[in-house]
Length: 549
Ligand SMILES: Cc1cc2nc3c(=O)[nH]c(=O)nc-3n(C[C@H](O)[C@H](O)[C@H](O)COP(=O)(O)OP(=O)(O)OC[C@H]3O[C@@H](n4cnc5c(N)ncnc54)[C@H](O)[C@@H]3O)c2cc1C
Ligand SMILES: *[C@@H]1O[C@H](CO)[C@@H](O)[C@H](O)[C@H]1NC(C)=O
Image: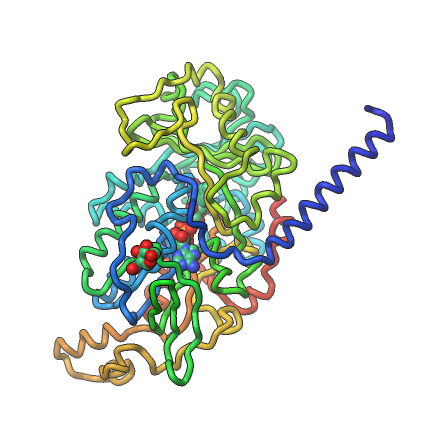
């Protein structure tokens, strides 16, 4: 080793490896993500199971809106749509248990990208639109908390403001982050007021992190229990709208048939029968391009790996028992993220590890199978925590609390209690896709404007009732019930690993769009998220990735 020749051989070997990985990757990106697998790995979040986890009764034959997917997007859409119009007939189709996609498997952070990428965002979209996107992200923690409070599920959903730390191990990266923070502070001083950069000595002293940490950026953030938030809300909706809201679990949508002369609505096919509907909402995120093929390579499934770990015995001053959240940047491509449960064994919910090994950078991209997780990432996660906090702050390994009975599930008895995989959706231009799917992108014709199931059964049409001057209660009800935009397919997806600061308000905006109430969202919805044919043509994954490197 060490001779010129063997170095050349090593480099050649590396190039061959990378090329092979890229070849496999480009094939994977062109392949359908398919339906969610039927044997997903078990996320710690979903135990104990929700009482509605395998909800379902006979499918109705038709509906006003069929939502595909029961994660936070589908739930937000259903919540806001039914709030606006409590008689709307809404069906959620879910391929597996309720909330068994990314929302039930994630890191639980409500942490908006703020200064990170700010300059690029401003240059590409202009300062005013860029600010609107930042405010849209920031609104999530308060908006979800307000709903959880109103619905009396705050305790279950654990939505809380945290002290958030962006921790840098590498000094150069820390300096870059600090510069980005300064740039953002100049442009958005009010929002940025609390954010502060701390140097190595302060980090060790104030936050009990490992000696040698380069520094951190400190500011407000948020954390939650997404599975409980979603399942508790859905349970409330089922109660409240028992006649007109259905969830059908273990009922995948296998295809959508465009309207025809004989049947002017969409036919949504499942193995349990089909539903006719004028509106379809795609809330399937990483899987969206299975049913919407033109979205392939625009929303790309990526497998993430998560773990639940017991904290070391001395760790609580560093993590504040769940009131602090962290993102660790070891230097290089990937990063790791940590929240902590505020109760139980105060488990550390720890994920990330992307590109932590040379050959793992591409291995999870284009993967839609969450029955397993990456070996090298899981190994990284299992070892990294005491390194980030330092052996002093970590203390001894904690003994398992054996009084904990999780319905017979045998968690790991060491530091790592559980590990699982989850599928997120990377957007080819880095921004979520929210809105009506133009025909070119859905690949299907829309039902004619005049056609809704109610009109078929003889109620009056929208224009007629809107111009009606009658004030009778019946008329008002009819008008509200029929208030939807013209029929079509709709999407909210592609949050690029940041669903808790995009999905809830995207679902809310989508409900405004479908219910023809766009004036209600014009003050807060960033138009850059809307689906347009032009944006779709331009969105290019390679360009997005190279911009972010
Ligand atoms: C490991 C991991 C960690 C993450 N950590 C964070 C984090 O800390 N903070 C953050 O902001 N974001 C995080 N994310 C991203 C976030 O979880 C997602 O952006 C968000 O949950 C997406 O919600 P969704 O409802 O759109 O999709 P999902 O929750 O994935 O829901 C889609 C649903 O559609 C169902 N489905 C798919 N196809 C069909 C079909 N054909 N028929 C019927 N049903 C179907 C699926 O089973 C699934 O239940 C993470 C993601 C992962 C995977
Ligand atoms: C659809 O069929 C599957 C498999 O038989 C079943 O588990 C599920 O409960 C059915 N769904 C509905 C809504 O009937």
